[in-house]
Image 1 (spheres, rainbow over the protein chains, first blue to last red):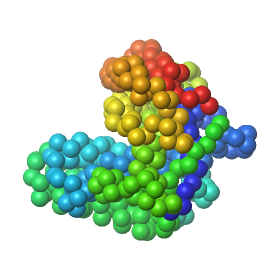
Image 2 (spheres, rainbow over the protein chains, first blue to last red):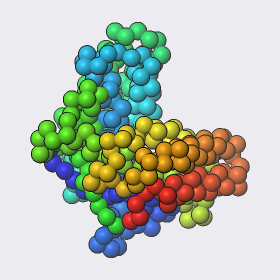
Image 3 (cartoon, rainbow over the protein chains, first blue to last red):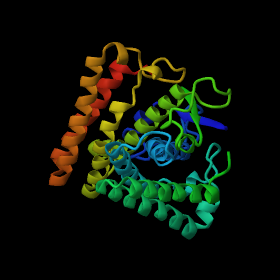
Image 4 (cartoon, one colour):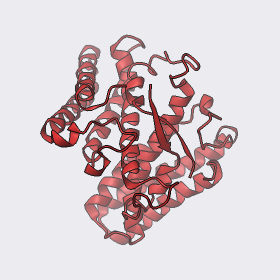
Length: 160
Length: 160
């Protein structure tokens, strides 16, 4: 597995800084560039989504017992977070050293947006299913959401 | 600024894996340990919170014009994400190489929980304020939320 640089304390660095667009690439050797911070934000968002989807995948795959309350909590988080990805691919983050995002994201915008929208729609459907409490339906919806993740990764993410 | 290792593709690695507690420390040299993944999840959560608080801080500080809709969107995200921090400090993530989390988090649990709850409460109050649309009140609530961030960082986070 490849590893990339994560900027510790980025959250604080972004406090009133990125918002003000005060961070510029190459400002100082030890400061992350705006594009690096954008990639770190994007990867962090995926990590938080993945961290909450993980327990859902484990339930759907029978690795842990199904827990309706846990499924609901996790599904609501994924459904809340997935739409945030729409802002997470600014053009200047294309090609930044430690990104795994393929350039096709920015050249095949329509295809990428469609793949992302599928995740958004399916995670919303999953969250809705968890309110119903039917384990079989919830597991099926987890599977569909997982396929949306994988479909996009296969096409638009550099393989590990 | 110090940098630490971020594991690219952690989101996928956690799919059905962390949930099943199948990842063990030292399983393979190139695979992150469970504790490393926990730290990465925690730091990612802070990065996403910080990335959304940044524009709020910039508005409160007058670095960018006040935008009520933007303030509401960002504040609702921070209020949604802040409570997720309650799960982000498992005991085995104490002392992991690239963490900035001080051991006091786990020795002074009451103090840390109180500091974290302050963030949760203030970010909820901020989100509520953004529904009112009063810029002065919203800016004040942003300031109070920022103080909750800083108060906890000053006490429980290693200085950069």
